[in-house]
Length: 462
Ligand code: BES
Ligand code: MN
Ligand code: ZN
Image 1 (cartoon, rainbow, N blue to C red):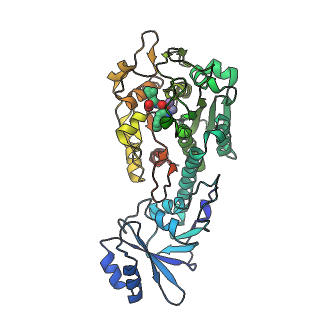
Image 2: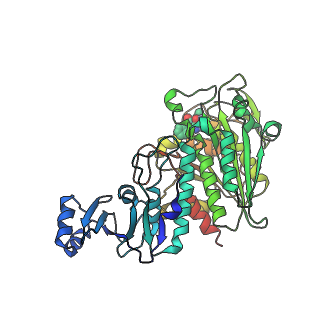
Image 3: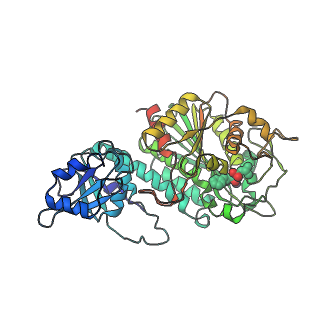
């Protein structure tokens, strides 16, 4: 459990260790202004003011301070302080002559650990940062909490996080907010959400599939639907994945984790919206009851879908969830999913693919990503590719035969369940970081969350 709330505190002139922010452009001038012993210490530690370099500088008596290299000392990005927060010893710190700004987030997340199964190696106490901008503490802490929620959920192995545990996580987020959580499973799921039931059928006995819904906020406020893919484990189903492709599939509920974290932010900041969160939660497993290639499913919306590949399961469960969201006529729908390997082939692990049927919404999300250091990249809803997943016997299939434009065809499949004219955006995100960066350890991660939050909070101003 990460307690970010105590790691940023208002600066009231408490005793604290000074942090000097230095970039390569300002290094010379900064060095010249330092006492000789600090200059020598910096050079002995090879300090050049490059990003993420840290030098400990001796002061009077038992005092010391630290120099931190950053890209641009005049304009901090979210991760500029993360390495320092990771490396420095327990204590209170203050940036000399500057506020942390956006970098407060990285200060917090530099202290994130996933410690459910083993104690952290360093076992260090808290590194507290004093800030002259107390009004900005809340948002930094909320964003760190939301990011940690995504990371914790994604990092938790499928054995300990099935549909039931995902439901419990949603209930925990709802707790104390006045939100109403509704869960549909069993006969109600078979009846109302045939595609969610079909994907979850092989695991029904042990890990019953369900649709988790959360509603919150003033009924008269504009309705916003947030939908997240909650495949707690994706074996591929009968079209089973090879072991290499299956290894990371505990993270296939990453979209649900993003959706839940975004909902948490919406509620925490009391956005003037009527929130509708929908998480179809299943395990895509193998058993005699499994849905099969060639099966035809009748969807909630009434469209028939031929199964070309049981491993294209995310779009099926999302189709029914999007259809349900649409029934309440929201003015905006946001969807998050670890939907395709093809999006990763196209954009790599760091950039979520953004699909949107509305240019204004897309622009707001792209801007939100740029402004918060959480970039996303737009890809086209190229309608002509609808023909790639045509079916001989059903309205369409869930997968195409060729391997072209896999992220696009998956998004086009989702679009079939979104009402025309309703602004909708879909994030095809990796929800995972394959190698560590400051403040972003290897493992589950939120990618696209701040982009979405930034756009949402700008659109719905209190
Ligand atoms: N969950 C996977 C997509 C995925 C794989 C995301 C690896 C991130 C990393 C999804 O359910 C899937 O298996 N998609 C298939 C679709 C194909 C069968 C049409 C894919 O992308 O290969
Ligand atoms: Mn799959
Ligand atoms: Zn999947």
